[in-house]
Image 1 (cartoon, rainbow, N blue to C red):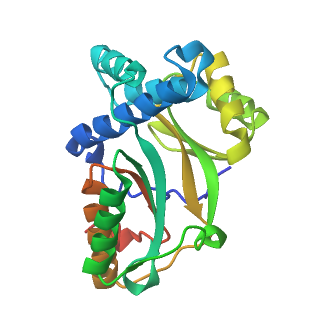
Image 2 (image 1 turned 90 degrees about the vertical axis):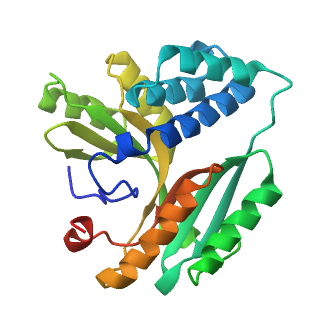
Image 3 (image 1 turned 90 degrees about the horizontal axis):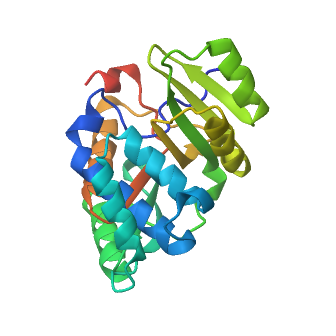
Length: 245
């Protein structure tokens, strides 16, 4: 099983994880916080928290930082975070989904709208991009000493729709409704993920010339830098030429 859209996220260059580690930590801490608010601070009975902790470990977050995030989520006096989604069209009609966790939705929407406007895009209504994307579970699992054939059979049984394999990791894609099943299967196998998340995968991608594509990527980078932004998804085709830039 292979060939799914491996450029489903905007992590374009090796080493991006290290370069943006503090930003990644901030996002994971927010995810842990809201998971605790929703389901309590015990990961045994809180699947969303278990996934967030697994992502924290995959990003090499220190244990004391994880624990502080759990404690913060249990603090009734801490700021309330709200999950929000913004949809719009960037330069050259590229579709952009922006997922946020914020304590001030007015600030967030104002910022996101300004970013779109700066690059000639336009923020639209929620739901306008539903026909362009599928919501999928995406799991990145270090290969380690896993037996590839046996591991693939196990995850296929748990609902894997696609498995991409490279020298370092398995990238497993599931239907959104099978996300929980895959979490349970990996836990049963004692396999720790590098990351696990629900992502919006484009049904098809748009190819632009390099100069136009760079403009879109600058907008995506600007949006990603916002502290309220958790994830950005798009339907821009990241060609080999663009990846090498």
